[in-house]
Length: 144
Image 1 (cartoon, rainbow, N blue to C red):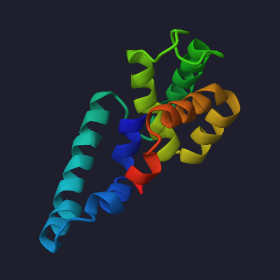
Image 2 (cartoon, helix red, strand yellow):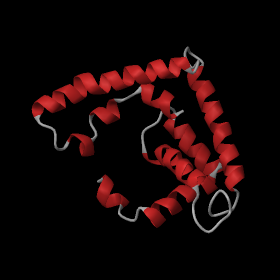
Image 3 (cartoon, one colour):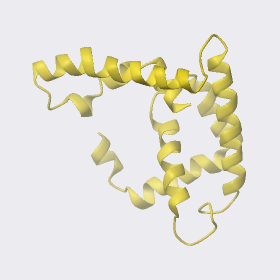
Image 4 (cartoon, helix red, strand yellow):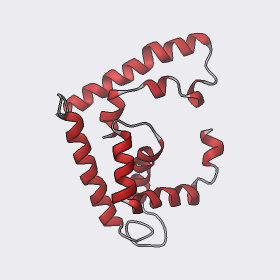
């Protein structure tokens, strides 16, 4: 889902304030007009390699993503971490790295997915918030 979404629209990255704040005019020109378009082209190529192209690709990706989110939500259940231990494991870290993007970055079909997560997988949203607060208390300072 994330690769498909990034392949659809990289405009948010082209204008990301945190990335471009230290760029000079020449660097900014190359970032916006060469680097970001190349990243988008490569991502689209990779997504086509996954077999996700055509008119129905967006729907298929959304359906697959929802199924994956439900599977993760049932695995997490009401536990604090995925393996029901007192500290996060490698799976918790990987899940956080992916899920945090669903919560905080622009996505294809964003409104539907965020509503789906809110309604059907609230434990994943709580997990992301808890991990963020527990391990990245300076999140706002770093990301703003």
